[in-house]
Length: 625
Ligand code: F6R
Image 1 (cartoon, rainbow, N blue to C red):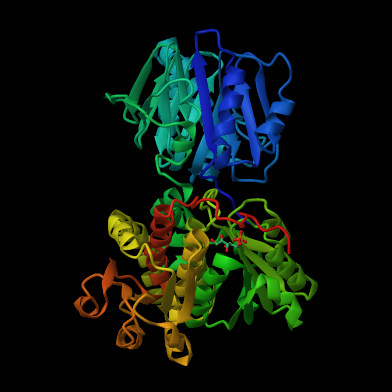
Image 2 (cartoon, rainbow, N blue to C red; image 1 turned 90 degrees about the vertical axis):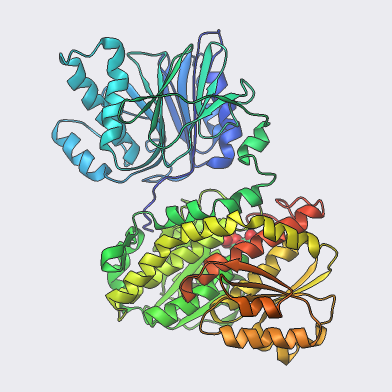
């Protein structure tokens, strides 16, 4: 298995106080409420007792922390995915050579390799594969320079060293940093990865979200990108990276811990749908060479030569991931010219599939643990195929058992119904299409067009999400409806099925996906005035065809809700309701079109008072066949 794994989600919690509280206890308790952010390894540091780290989640860490481990301040971390495997050595916090500077980090330091080379040449010794460790050594390097008669007061060297180091790193970070030389002081920084400060009485906190803070104080300050905060038990000062002071008013949060985990949203499902722009950015980060129209997939480099010779791809997946696979089939065949079949994980091995070394079996799985998909991977392996994965959960069984793959970087998906994972699966498939396509006949021009449009997706998704009140109104309008049809063609044919699946699992009403062209072969018989059809009819190569399918529905008095391209006035004359989405490339249109369907399923079920995040009879990870 070879996947390249940066770290985006994870949980940071840091504490400094002068009120007799045991920092170790505060930190370990706080980590529990951050556990939803990551659970492959955990660690804690206090200046008094040192560091304890372990693979596994908080419970493992609690077991490992010895009696008598104490402190008045400290930092702790829960990891979801990082450079390197989930081992003790790669767990956070990371330290410098002398164990003086300790860093807990979310994000990815993109220039860590060049910094590591520079620091190694200066004599720094690295023990882990983590990009974060580089930051600890970089701070150490600046501390050494500043302490060597720079004229900077002793009480200021730590913050000056951190500011200098953060100005040198490229990439994203949310960090909590501690220095043994000033044990009461904590420094936080934010660039692309959230950090919130908690302001208590003679105690201050740093966390990735407010959930571990709220039981101590409701007064918080959310850092902005480029902010660096210096905390002691009695003070907090915020700087910009340029050292300029920032005045940011604290706010009182009226949330409980669960609401904080949900970022203030009512359900994880909505929060996860709202994360769409960020998810796409994370899936794309560092993987697009736009000027050359190339995709750089580090996790596939080890098998790049084999991939050049692949003559057939079989995608195996279940549920939502299967629908992602169907979209991938269209992408890969049209732009990479490779024959693709998509199989349900649960069916693959019954077909006696004919495979050889020129076949790649590509598993798509959010959890990386779905038993049927895993069984399909094993079948592929047994028959000599190259096995690949598009997987979200780092270190999961599918990630470990496949020969190579691409991680989604979507962060943990908590709601049982899959939303953001699908968007990142579709994005990863577009990257894979570029990767394999450019190995074959795809022109640089097409590669560049895809790259450009991939980059535009987050902004377009922001727009769709900003219009979500329109979907909410639609959900109310159709609230009493018991049956829905979803139709789409070509790239949006699988999205019709996904729209129906979302609605079914969230709200238990009857919903059917149907290829729009298939309507007349049977489904049309069901249409009448109480059986609405949701039609994916964005402006693309099959627009006219779907338009005419909608006319067939209207002729049977069926109400139509259209998902259409901004500016399309014709559709508004035909459909009963229209939700507009921005224009994009046809191959990428499912990434935009599916979001209103996810929102519709969400609002429709929420208004029925259902527990959207935990639909009855369903589990997040289906580890039985
Ligand atoms: C639907 C849903 C499921 C999963 C399926 C595969 O909302 O969540 O259909 O997509 O069980 O799960 P993974 O991707 O974990 O293999």
